[in-house]
Length: 137
Image 1: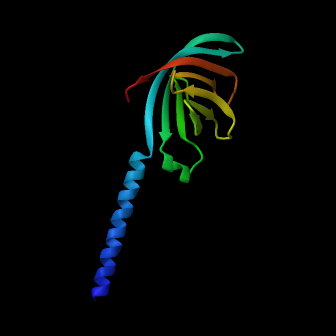
Image 2: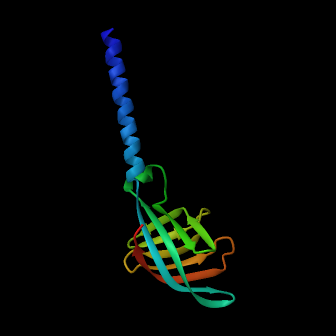
Image 3: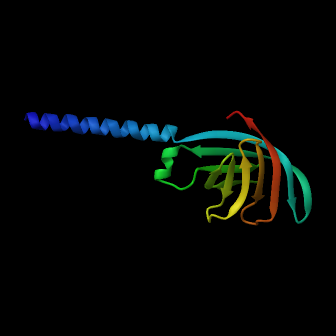
């Protein structure tokens, strides 16, 4: 009987520990930053000013156990579309942006807050270059 009680206590402790670990990983796996980026979008039809919004999620070091990506990025062109980039690589102060097929699509500087990115993904025709400023969530 004592063995059964000890075993149940051990299983309960293990279950609580796993739940706490799961909560920790879910809540503290990524840091999120949001930016408003004003710049110029260039396409075969010419250039025009554009403001887009960027949500950057940078994964913590332990995320490398599950994924090669260092983060993810959402780029929104208001009233038009939202693009998802799920493969980011860090190179010093630059974040290299790649699509899900691992094709290079652009770069974001965490130092100067400048971005150059190919949009939209399905057409691969337009290039946006601009300056970003951090905004609140």
